Image 1 (tube, helix red, strand yellow):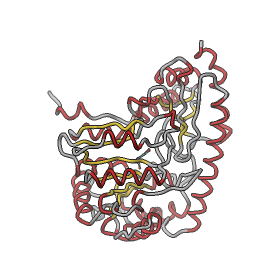
Image 2 (cartoon, helix red, strand yellow):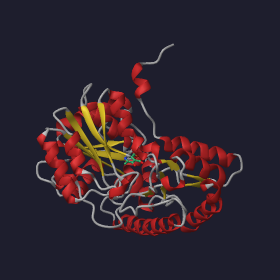
Image 3 (cartoon, helix red, strand yellow):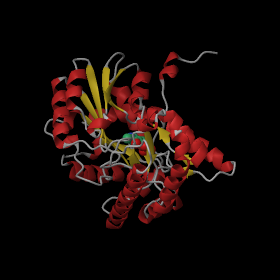
Image 4 (tube, protein in one colour):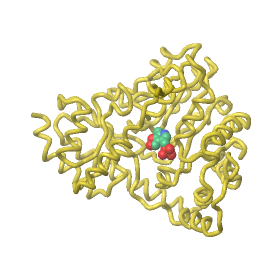
Length: 393
Ligand SMILES: Cc1ncc(COP(=O)(O)O)c(C=O)c1O
């Protein structure tokens, strides 16, 4: 029995493997602190839960059109028009089960064998995985720690060329927490126009900015027609298990292509979760809950940052957005994988090696600060500090 060749080119998001490992350790009686997966411990806002429960009770449990519930597409078109400063039609918005499918569908729709795709590395692992899977050429743009993970425009200019078909950007960025400045966005836009490339803007952390302002590449003239935006309910509303994401397409034709991929793969995103999602639109109570979460995450970020500063061999950059710290651990003299395994085994704290985010992640580990209370984060730091001398040797 032989599998298709393309399967060997598919990567994985290792956070799920480490989550499974940590859950198994818990079943064996260990008290694990979860910092591996990018998740939040807040309840989903009540209005959203109520909206979904009401939908379930009124039998909104059947198929929907593949592109999603029209009321939700209309609501999101309005929300996106306002937040991104462009006119968005409901027919250009598609609802997907979580945000990830939009990565898959966009790369499948735009990339032929051999086309080049520029993507951030370290970066969200699904980009590189799906580029390779589809036969595209994955061209890594290194996110450099020494420059505070600022986007390196000069490097982008060097690697972009006539074969560049798609540029993937992610701001605020997973795993580094970096945000793209207006100047960087303008430079990326310039290059995309020069080579007539699509831009995929992964904006799932757009509402998780702690310092500075979120800016979308959409707001730059000429980018609306070549940019696909991904956003999701996952992080913003603490809804990772609900699976509600959405894409904003450059035009209706592009949206039809994505809709047909939804049709062929999952038929449609679940019905009642979309009614829940609709309850968040234009709802000041939900907005207040999101703002409170953001405030709390900022405090947690600062506590974890301060704690890591005291560990020998660790140098940390304070992230402006998203929900992760990405400390440099080269000063410990150990590899990313060693540090991850050591912390898991000796401190019962689940984190990720930086290499889960690509080859340029070596020398780092990623820790999510959104999953635990401040007390629990302090405990994680204490546990690590206690065993650290053994790691340093
Ligand atoms: C940058 C980025 N894009 C997309 C996703 C996928 O989100 P979802 O869980 O909605 O599929 C994540 C999840 O961690 C992410 O960090």
